[in-house]
Length: 236
Ligand SMILES: CC[C@H](C)CCC(=O)Nc1ccc(S(N)(=O)=O)cc1
Ligand SMILES: [Zn+2]
Image (tube, rainbow, N blue to C red):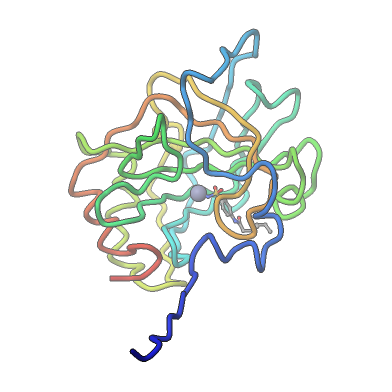
């Protein structure tokens, strides 16, 4: 019998280590949260945040999800695991991933959720820019919100309804409708926290992850709209 040439094509995270050495690091995200192994928060101070509401925002399709840029408008995240530093919201984005609706990045006791919202903040007490902070171990703090199918999310809909206008990578649409990012967070603010990394290249180990325990509900239609416009980074 003739030899069948076997070509093993490695794509995705397995290849990231070649170009991004950070991806081989010791604090890589996402992770599976094993709830039985999580220690109780002890005497950590409360996590507090404040976001500006009435400023224009732009939604952009970076090719792998959608991202809302805060355009430098004022905001603050402090307390919890963040010591005495004050962090500022840079951008927020969503991961929806594969078609079967298991698109979250973090899993909880092995369970994936339909999606995951990330609010990316940087340490303005210690660094002068987001890019500088993104290279430092205490440079970034990301609030993670697990999304599950349930009732429609009105605040998130202010972005989801714009997705048909940014179907291609690089597309961008600006909206001035008031929006409070705090309304994207769950009612109960219990969270898990761990030192981790950016979940996509360059996978820099500069993120203090703060993942809320309570999922937030979005409608099946909102998930469908998100899945329609990018599945695994491809516009469909
Ligand atoms: C040079 C600075 C920075 C790499 C520029 C690009 C960037 O912001 N990337 C990024 C941000 C957040 C996440 S996640 N998904 O929240 O962990 C993943 C990647
Ligand atoms: Zn993310």
